[in-house]
Length: 452
Image (cartoon, one colour):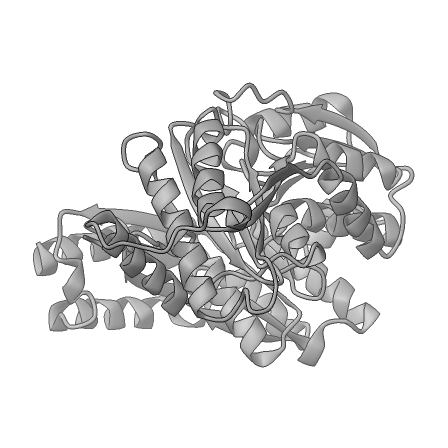
């Protein structure tokens, strides 16, 4: 059996890869592994379970609840809420475990299961490995001790989750948003109620799109992966800017008043300067991945801020932040983590903090985002090659070195193997888009010849 857990839980096509049996089995295994680790010591265990609006989330939620309750875990059902809300409530309610059912920005047929440890933090790799191992043992017939009578878990609906989470978000804001007109694209996802409620309570005039989830339309031509509707709505309504989330609202991208995109790197840059001004940017350091635009790195250097770079994935950003005590990190894709107030990327919180900065300074989002210049970036995926030899091919190393000499200090080359597909990603940045494209295409040809 291949590893079930990826960098963000277990994902697959619902009812094909991710079945009710798998959801139930993993939930039982998670309960047993955490029990063995002493998490439930001295008390009756409690789990918080939430989901995004996907139709498949309904039967997967039932399977997860059945698994947990059958293993003696009491369940608090919080319903359709963003991933960061479930993480927050896991900590706020003192639960031993959190479970979120979502495939984030993926298309509707997919779904996923993400487990949170006590406090709302992602499970450690070794615990995920142990859950997989126990799941496989149970799947192949190994007996386990099943509670009976009063020992089985009880299931209750927790209706206060939305209000409790919105109150948390508003408590973080340094100032109100009065006078701002903001368009919100909710991707027909988990934040369809939460995000408009939070922005409205904070004083903004809001226009919402993509806020009518029906279980089938999540991420369908809208949200952070499809910004055209938001761009058009911002211009049409004469809004100050727009905010887009993905299906589980752990991401935030933005659009300025002209309809121009403001990506995760630019959002990080704006928040970094705001936090430095307020004295909350510990060690004046930001954490980002190696995929961040070179323009972000140059802007941070110019502003006197330090940058720590990690492997691609918000999981690795979070690990570096926790290990070294940094307060702000994120990805170009819009995962932004403000560790003093969230244990995971939080799209609604990010959007609110961005809006608060606009309101506080009286400057437009376009002006604030201008702190960094995005250098042209070209990404080419090269399929059907031996990605395991990316770091060992002499021919490829020589080609990269030659490209780096050509680009100089205002360009960058990044080659990396995909974690999920048999392909190599070639990314080139340069001051000129034509140069970036030319170098990327040349390197892609070398990848094909050297690794094909």
